[in-house]
Length: 90
Image (cartoon, rainbow, N blue to C red; front, side, top):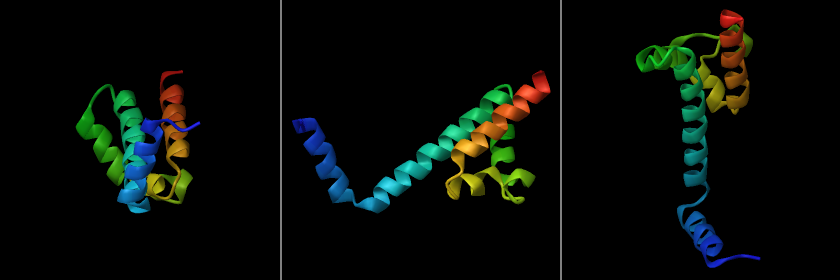
């Protein structure tokens, strides 16, 4: 059963079109990966952003984390970050 709020959200989505939804999804996925890198870096945002944008990752065919996220691999990037952190601290 749709509520007025659901209808308003659907209407706004229709008005903005799929490109707006794709942009929001891309933004959200980037932020998730950057947050994971930030947490592992000990709260060093410049370091986390530098890694995200420039470090070529062999696990992703030497793409950067940013490129891998753009290719739809955000969950895999986050798993890699977690495994690197676990390996470094374990």
